[in-house]
Amino acid sequence: MKFLDLAKVHIRSGSGGGGAISFRREKYIEFGGPDGGDGGRGGDVVVEVVDGLNTLIDFRYQQHFFAKNGQQGMGKQRTGADGDDIVLRVPVGTEILDEDEETVIADLTEVGQRLVLARGGNGGWGNLHFKSSTNQAPRRANPGQPGVERTVWLRLKLIADAGLLGLPNAGKSTFLAATSNARPKIADYPFTTLHPNLGVVGVDGAEFVMADIPGLIAGAHEGRGIGDRFLGHVERCSVLLHLVDATAEDPAADYRTIIDELEAYGGVLAEKPRITALNKIDALDEEERAAAKKSLEAVADGPLWLMSGVSGEGLTEVLRAVRAEISDDKLRRSDANDKDDTWQP
Image 1 (cartoon, rainbow, N blue to C red):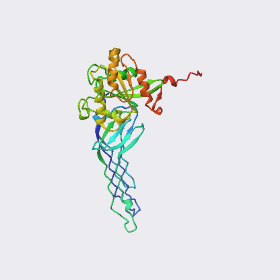
Image 2: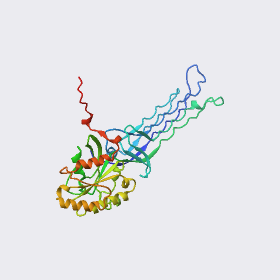
Image 3: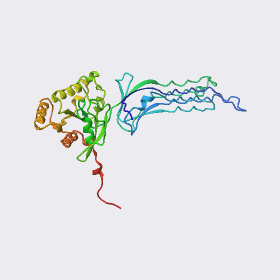
Image 4: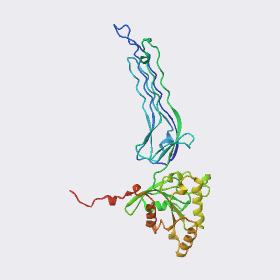
């Protein structure tokens, strides 16, 4: 399944059915009077958060969603049937944006949330409603109200507890593969990761969700490389894990590149707690490790961790540092701790 995190959709709710102009016609009843029924109500356009989805790919192949119109009223005081609603099913973490792609209409973060994007028009009144003492045979009925037509954007921001940041080939995908059951594509060329990946990471009996996004380069906020369009997927994270390639010519410059892009992106990303880790130390000897660490410590904020996603050195310590920044209510217990050792028949 392809990953899609932004989609433009055109929606229209159903129009209400018109009221009926009708008069009672029965044998032996000379003045039956008006009996026109009301029109049915138009259907709504509803967006609903469902479980089991992690992409908006369905909206690439269908962008127009029109609810059904209400039926016309009928004689014998019969009301027209209401139009059927149409439901747009989206994954958890979807934002609904107005046509300007900036105004946030809703932020859907829980399974089961429902939002009416376009309400159907009310049905018109039949001539039965207009009967009075001075107008015994009204020949008037209301038309149904028209539906609402609008264009909205759906933008997916993944729900993750921790996010991975770094330049291309900093080892983010290798780290995610080494610490979770996720199997992202890993290769020795830049921009191997083209879309975000999620993995459930466990340490000390606790589990949390980690997101790996495509690497950033200098000028990403201006659209260079893949740009910063995927940074929205780590906006909801409690902590960011910044991986720096220890084998790079200047790890300190690589570190500043990512920090500058976070600050240029704006929002709260630059202010989120960050764990900085010097990755790929398995490729360095002790002297080279010390030199790279000293260079990075001169510019990095907070403590610096050394690790290798390939050899596994330092992984547990880094995961514990990430776990410490995540609130307990977001952590999940691993299956091993959920088992009850007490045998019962």
